Image (cartoon, rainbow, N blue to C red; front, side, top):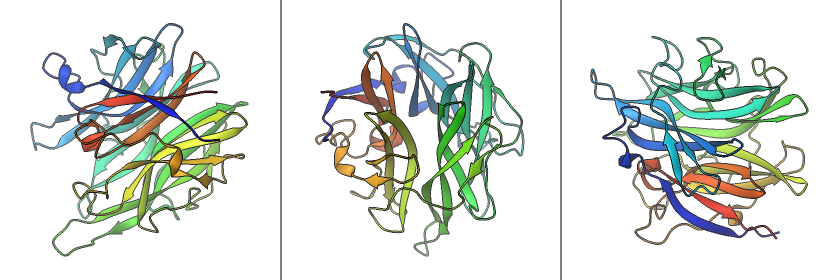
Length: 323
């Protein structure tokens, strides 16, 4: 089966709102959808600068769109989840923010960021719960439900969770380490996709340090933002990947979309030919495609993703053409 995609282009640009909405900053990264009866809510991470040090702080917002993803109905005007506490794993922001319905509750699995000294950041995965149909979320606790461990020493992040038969299945990333590739450069990180499962969203069983998606670029490939859909008897994973260093501006080394399929959620066959085409020169996704999210809505399958400059100018959508 060969996937065919209809690209609908960019559907949300944060620069349209940054001057009129204090909760929207630059970037609209990692769009992740939750489908309601008559609209789709798309959560994303945006950034504002800390006036004390000038550094970015990531926080969560959302946009409500009609179910064709062509009309914007509302943009959040309030904080979705409060900032992390001083010294905690999410002190300096949340990115991404994955939402799932499970046992009549709406859960969010957050990636919390905190700055370090010898390297730039570390991350962990937190849990939050909504009591108002996804408008706001409260942390289950101040700490993470998954973080660095004996065999996954850093950068546990990017949870995508599916609920099936009262079991929560998580695909996430774990860091394999940091390396300084040039004497005059800061260390860069490498991370791979792993799998875990839970019955309560709090206690997770994981096969530690077992990368489940084969590399296409070799050991220094960094894989991020897995998202999984079950369709026609298979699990389909979309993710993004890049070189581990010199990826921010060097042509051909930045993020692009990847794909793999599985029949058991854990053993994956990779085939990157199945992703939407890169945009033509000058288009919003011509230089980069990253942070994908696959979902179903009214018998259609959509793939949200960010484009150039890591989502600085928003996100777009491609639709899978079904037979």
